[in-house]
View 1 (cartoon, rainbow, N blue to C red):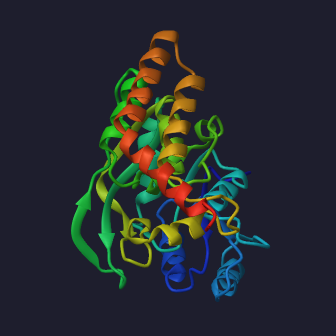
View 2: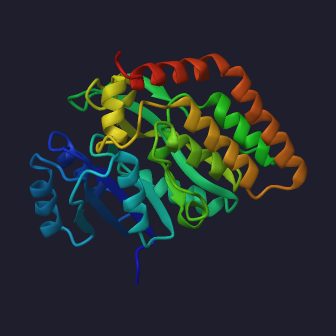
Length: 293
């Protein structure tokens, strides 16, 4: 019988913290899960560390990508390999309090209209020591899908929602994570049209926020390498693909006509409000690609 919960751990060169991450998952009070680790062609000891854990615990499955396919594609890969009714992404840098799965699963069972449940987040440092900062992600419990979408876009500051537990059936109705910076936000926007988002009020997700682990601290060149390691994209684009995918979600989402019109109008306003950033992005990429005289 397949496990009720699947956990996906995409990793690239995660030898520094992955033992801590795996230990925190194996210590969960809810034990009936599978753990899928996708090693994105790491060049360090990540694969050998994971193989040690595979030999110790039959719940763990390790797959290894022959080449680095980029972070978002690897996130999508672990989901496609999952068999549980509920799914959680996790990072090789982060930790989970022992009751995280149990608490989120109970809340989802009690709220059948919810597509994801997530705990509050406590940030930790490079040594795994908690900082004083505990953050809460916005709950989306509004009846109107367009209200949930708009509230997400306007109030989500850091995507700690990925530390929660999702309904697999809802994720399968989306295009998953898009292969560009902010592609995780597009996925959450799609999910906001499908159901509510709810929170567990305790800080059970321990997220390592350091210059080494947090995307917000990386340079544009490092971010491009993270998303496009084969350097297949011309230039470096963020705002254009993000807003274009938001528009696609509004146009193609499962919405009645009035909701679709309201949401499409809102996204078009986002284009207008972002016109300066969009123009600067075009100018920057044109200058990068222009031939030298």
